Amino acid sequence: MATRTGKLLEKLRVWCATEHGRKAVVARFVGVSRQAVSNWLSGRQRLTGEQALALSELLNARSYANPPLKLDSKTAAERKADLIKVARQKQK
Image 1: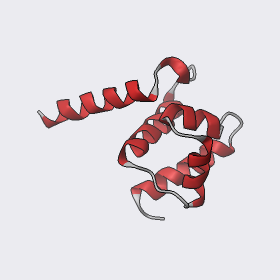
Image 2: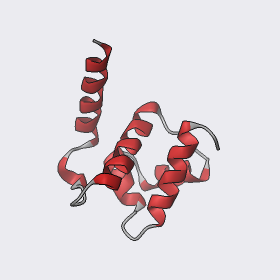
Image 3: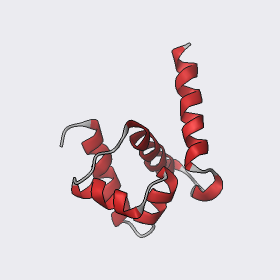
Image 4: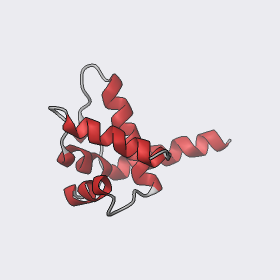
């Protein structure tokens, strides 16, 4: 897969294969079910733009966070509001 989404999903597969990479953690962070995460990985379901942004945020932040992120600190709705705010600021 050469698409950005394909690269993101490949990164997710690698992350989920690690000791701490759990589909439930991804699901909670993005605001979807564990089954949705499994469906993304198997190709049965596509990510929405918002889900892809949240997933990218998780994977990139987890790569650089030291100590690891506390994933329960914000809800999916709060993260979505943050992403919209950043997008609006970039448009100015």
